[in-house]
Image (cartoon, rainbow, N blue to C red; front, side):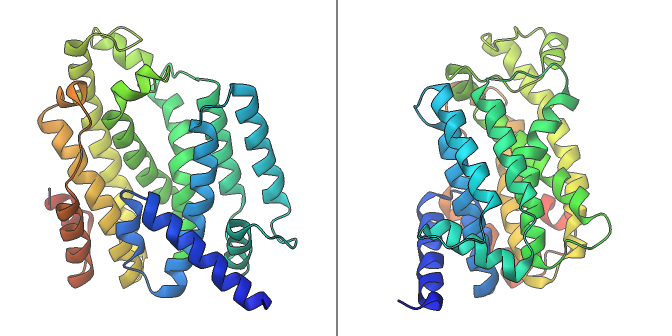
Length: 291
């Protein structure tokens, strides 16, 4: 197998991971032109590997060893390897100048999960959200060719906070059962909710409050759209639009997260993605209006 054939095979494996594992991310990726789609699939595949280590069933010390191993691999990503994901990342890095420190931020965030870090204030939570979600936004900007646009990285971070906060609200009960409490203790206290979020009634009030916060972060982060080309706009608009619809479902019935997992039907996700491809996304209002 020639080096070029090995890279092609590596990208195909990353795309297979993305199709199989990505629940919302894949809807946006598929709207990109093939080179950018392959590069973002590689980004997703490595991010998924890091997340899987942090979320796995191994004891904490083994998880930390695994994350340290990935961190070491990141420092040697340009060296010869048979690892398909790392091979694809190395090629994407050479083509798009991926900011590899963003993967380091993601590892930092996963280490916080392993440590079952709790958050006293919303500002503390923002640090975590920027590490685990804003990092992917910054990597995506490199692929989109917009990383040098003034203010683009900050807006990608803001949108990452919106998306991650939506994830946190959706998974609040499931995460609690795993010993992970993300919502800030100060906010919980202000809404009469115990720090372990065990009282559903007060948790509903807290979730409603955090939904308004997520709306504000969406409003800021979606300012990124104006900096992107047509296909990149469609990609980000689709992913953000799906998450925004999820947020609106939770906001309409905050207690729903105490009864089960809130989701957006697959047909609706596809409709959002196709709408973003067919007609220009244009502005934050265009994404947020379709809720």
